[in-house]
Image (cartoon, rainbow, N blue to C red; front, side, top):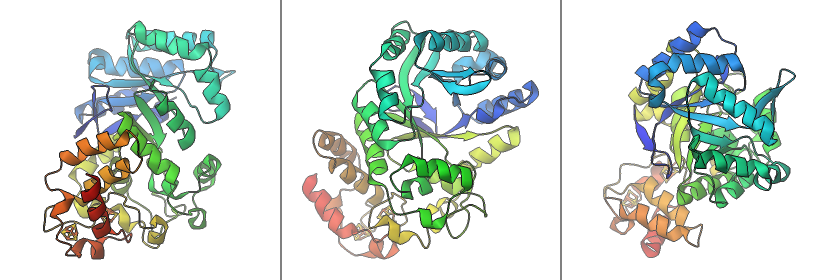
Length: 380
Ligand code: SF4
Ligand code: SF4
């Protein structure tokens, strides 16, 4: 297992975590098997957004005395009304479900208290300009949540939440196809429901790229959802690429985005947990998600996707990391300080580039690496 800093929370999260959605309505034996397999594999973070009593009780019971070994991402405002999964900003409703979460899980704290599912201006105001946010902050003051996070599917709204400075973590859907969809969250939900279509992908969405960089800049750790595009990306029928991606490629794509600390994968058995953590035994060739993007390379329009396909460099420059620092610096303003700190940690500076051009011929996305090395030399 690899562990990564979860933004500025001070927590170290396993790079692969557990999404518990599919444990809902499963018998206790399946929950116990999955949770125990996750703990044995070194997984130390799990998302639990479901409001149902039974699944909360089962997960708390399965964790037992190892509760402290798992970072619980719990959501404030996830509820069910008339047996229908729903969301609420009503403090009384939120409080009832949050207190039930603590009781059912037999714990007195939740590590990451998530502002649940904010995708629109209306939802943003209902959460951040209302007694709801006071309640969330009160939970933190009381130690009932240790950190405030938020979940969203929409990059502009997510960025707005990050800019408030109130949130320390963000749960966001991250995968290669979503990053290539038009900047419209409805397309994402359509793709999840009906499958991706090759023609739906129009090119890298700058808003999403900038969100990842903004999170990196602000020290907001991202945990990912929909890493496999609800299974569509690994399905021959629904993949928008020439062939289905593999789980390893999907995980690697998500983990190579700036600020991403952990990819949360939905598992319902020991076998699925073992399959998820098999990522750590994969070779670089197996992780190479650019293979999936064959035929889509033009969509990347010269933007670096931090894939490392251009290595090795005779000057031992980490080309992807130079680009990552440069992309953060390009955000302007105070971003430059953060970018400089990242750049300073590199073993070889961009100025070591001897302009041999070997990397450019290996880059599948036509990135002007030599030109960017010159720019980085100037900027840093
Ligand atoms: S052009 Fe520069 S960055 Fe690229 S491989 Fe050669 S030395 Fe390395
Ligand atoms: S320059 Fe090209 S090959 Fe290298 S990390 Fe960026 S996108 Fe990948």
